[in-house]
Length: 247
Image 1 (tube, rainbow, N blue to C red):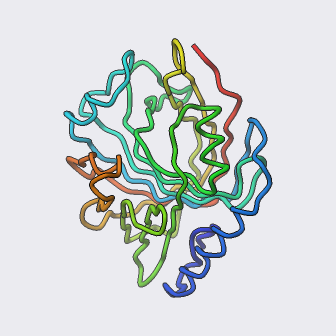
Image 2: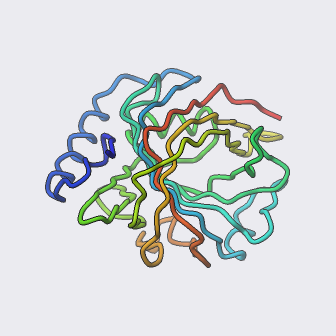
Image 3: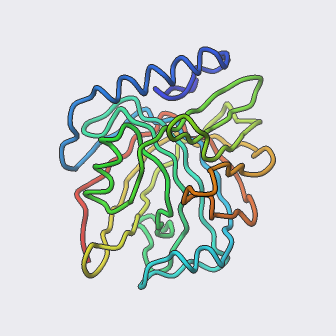
């Protein structure tokens, strides 16, 4: 069963999902200030899509000292976290590109976050302050109806991008490892965040293309997906954001 403050129970109607999303946003706005890291998250529900990006856009945006992996692969993550210490509960949605020379301890390519949203605002501020992610306030909402999982990134009530999964597996093996995120520091060097995780990985099929519907003046509108590679649904995931390391 899917869980998540910004998501919906399997089989729930769109009306109930919208109600859940509204409640989530209100609760977060009234939350306590976010302490400094480390942070622990549990029971995450996530919609993850692997893509290749338009090379011209990525080359123009990558900071000096970072190079994309061959093929300009990356992805789109949308998720909600109902429980944990520090950041949670919150939701997030963002684009990333895989980069060279920053493999995680489990061999996954390093990631540079291109842009996205965290909500509530305190969660976005924490990611920007401690990890250099440049997030804006927003929400990720996951809706399940008639066998289709629709994941939507929203900001100020407007959709930024949408992905859809179907044929989501019911038998989901355990999946664990670590992912390393890389961001430029304010002065020299980079901020490194290695994220250990444990989850259940559910195979799925992506329906159609990624819909990037951000307005022309929104920074996410510049991104172009060359190809959708695959999609998965993570459920009941736990992970941690440790104190940042600077090199």
